[in-house]
Image 1 (cartoon, helix red, strand yellow):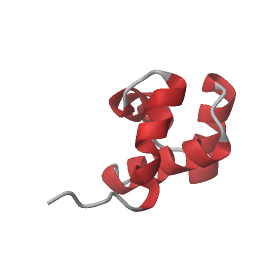
Image 2 (image 1 turned 45 degrees about the horizontal axis):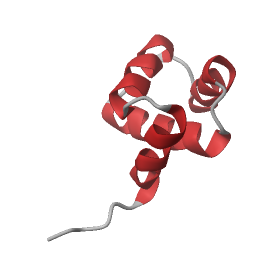
Image 3 (image 1 turned 180 degrees about the horizontal axis):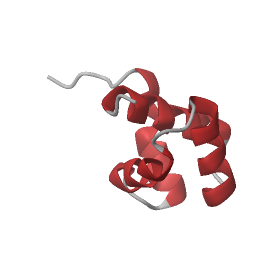
Length: 69
């Protein structure tokens, strides 16, 4: 059965298409700012990779869920 992806991960296909890198790349980039707060991690993606806030927020949300700080 094909179950539709919901929540922040639903942005992943458009993130990969727009920025040309797999989600694993972004998760590895976020390791550089592992100890920072949510919005600091979002700002990192915005500043260093020119990523929009919605896409950055979705990545950070999933990253933080999978990497307890």
